[in-house]
Image (cartoon, rainbow, N blue to C red; front, side, top):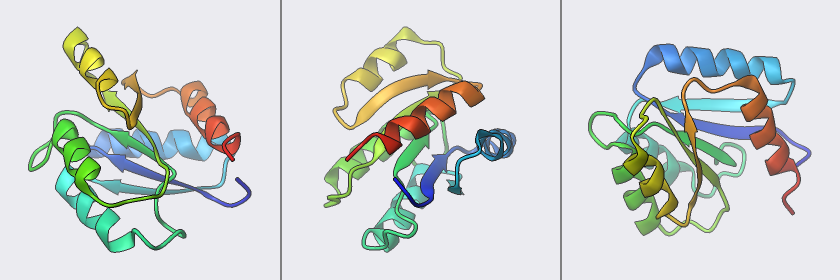
Length: 134
């Protein structure tokens, strides 16, 4: 990946969004980060930009507990959308419930479960994974 990495963070906590933005800045990668505070706003954004490679995300970090449309509902809505672009999706949650971690594994499009707080090392790992993709 030669250009910027498009990162979509879906989280209703402004402090988490702020922290992730700071971590992104420290990775040294060129990143265009967009944050949406619930799953419905994220779905609307994706529908509006499905043909726009400039902003369509390569990576999504999705919180579970949010108003309007939670993380699981977002994933289900996303699966119904006709989107061909490949996106790496990770659940990013403060949940320590084993059933949430197991539930994340039941979705083919979810690549993993990351417990908050997100570390700079883990984010760099995710960005490097994107670069290695064809």
